[in-house]
Image (tube, rainbow over all chains, first blue to last red; front, top):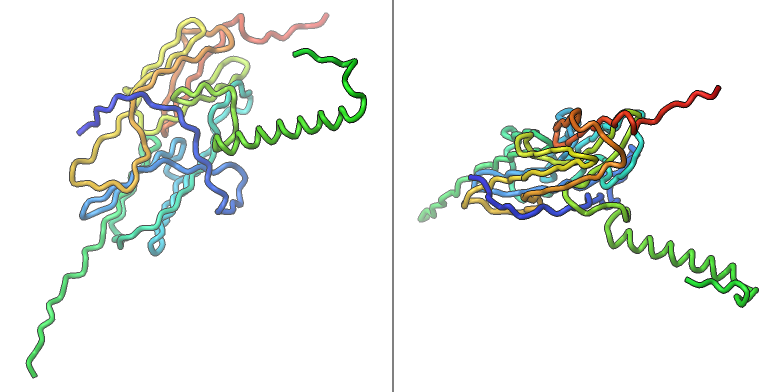
Length: 136
Length: 151
């Protein structure tokens, strides 16, 4: 199903990460725009990461914290001089706390055209146990 | 603005000037905070935001268009202008889905960029990879810088 929304896109400045994370590498750090949605079985996350290649992307899930880091290599040629700069180029960083238990072995990640699609399957809930009370 | 130098008090004008300068800088800083980043008076505020650079032979226009396919993009050049238009579609996920966050936007766009010099309209090349569009626009022979020999 395709969304038939044809409204005009608005220009938006990239959002810089608030400096709670200390960086060892110089350069700016941006927050990618994401969509997160869930069904009964899984949580899906879509993130806009223009300029990030597969080898520059790190997805880290530890306990209930999901961390996305995307490295962007500068693509400007050596002899190029700036005329008009409307957006800055930098790496991406975003962290989420997951409220559901995720099945670590079934996580699926795809990066295509600068968009990451991450599927996080939920662990099947423990079956409710019937407790029988015996007469004693 | 009329500047009356003669009647201006001789004392303390320098401190007035520095006060003004400080106020101006404070305003700039405030602006940066409100705008959430670097204040850029040159930005046209039209999607997509572009970076325009040049070297000896070409102009380069770059834009971030994540999730766009080459077919969804329309680029044309005429005169000194480059037009980028297209539509970004985000498929909906059905009815059984609950959204936690929805920040990515869909919609159409149409932007015209005036280049600072004459260009070779027929030799413009565009490339879309990893969500970054790069358009290389060769400069017209007359617009290229010439090395002048001194005899």
